[in-house]
Amino acid sequence: MLTISVIHFSLMGCAYKLSSESDSLPGNVKSIQIPLFKNDSAEVGAETFFTNALKTEALRAKFIQIKNDEKDADAILQGTITGVDVIANESVIEAKNTKYLPTETVIATQYKVSVGVELILKRKGSSEILWSGGFRRATNYSAPQITLPVINTANALYNQSAKRQTLDALSKEMMQAAFDRMVENF
Image (cartoon, rainbow, N blue to C red; front, side, top):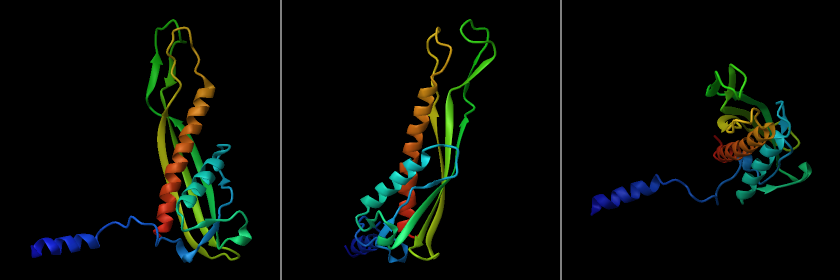
């Protein structure tokens, strides 16, 4: 019985902290302002996805207040999208000897979206950096598919919509990881 008690108490000391009651941001910051991300990529509007995703994570964290005005906040959490790369994956369909597509047509079946983001938490009114971190993630999305013999073009709006949905999902995933890392001061 003594052995079981010792194991029980030693495991309790290793338990992962599930409560966010004692969480805080670096520098004991209690309120932040999150301005619109700077977008250094060619992907227009990506900054909105990432700004909104980071604000959502901060709102979930009940121990921090988000302020609309910098003068009311303890610190400023600035984000920069350093790059958004969209490239066709190596998975392709090649049309050879077909009456529906031009000869030697190559159609991408998947695209890879890769995003880089940098975050900096600065104390208000100074150049003191309390925390900074860089993040890069990538994911795939399916390209528009040509399924009917009479259709020989892909829908560009579908491709744009699929890319935007992928960026939105990536922004949520990345900003959750970023906020968690910042809270852990890692």
